Length: 202
Ligand SMILES: C[S@@+](CC[C@H](N)C(=O)[O-])C[C@H]1O[C@@H](n2cnc3c(N)ncnc32)[C@H](O)[C@@H]1O
Picture 1 (cartoon, helix red, strand yellow):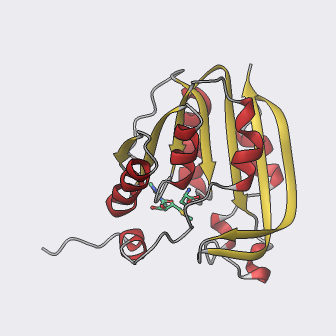
Picture 2: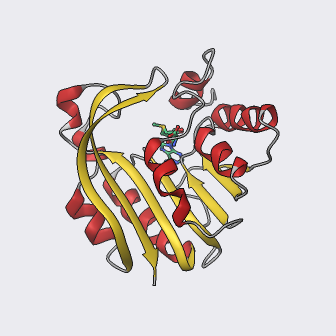
């Protein structure tokens, strides 16, 4: 039987980096919260721009994504920048989150169906060590009006209220909804409606 093609593999199989090679702005702003040299888990890391940025700052990075093609490009990007990252091809519904093992969990544009999102957020909190940081940026439903990137359905997007609930066990440092201009490759371009979260495990 023919194997079903992961749609992200098809996207990442194109020439170039779909979301560019520069890191996400919110991650750059907040990376100082992470313990120097700490271990970081990057969820839904795609072609690796955020993982490679963190590795270049001295963090030890494990990048997980369902796309083998994306993570192969992530390793190439790391090699070209002279840094090392660990990668794991896995659907997040099957990924085993090591408990209290990470100094940060980074979730940038990780838009999942709500039941899986709840599980992934809860396992992310468990995966953090005391003092570990959860960093997240996602589109919120208003993004459907801007049409400048992100999934085509509101259900996959996030809200302030949802993140407050999912991360209630953490000490919130940033929880904000914002409309901002994004330039991230050809995938994300222009005015965008986002929600951002940073919180620390008590
Ligand atoms: C919009 S891209 C973001 C990539 C990366 N975080 C970035 O900012 O460049 C979303 C990523 O989520 C991954 N993804 C979506 N659903 C997933 C799942 N259930 N398990 C693992 N990865 C998933 C896709 O393969 C894709 O790489």
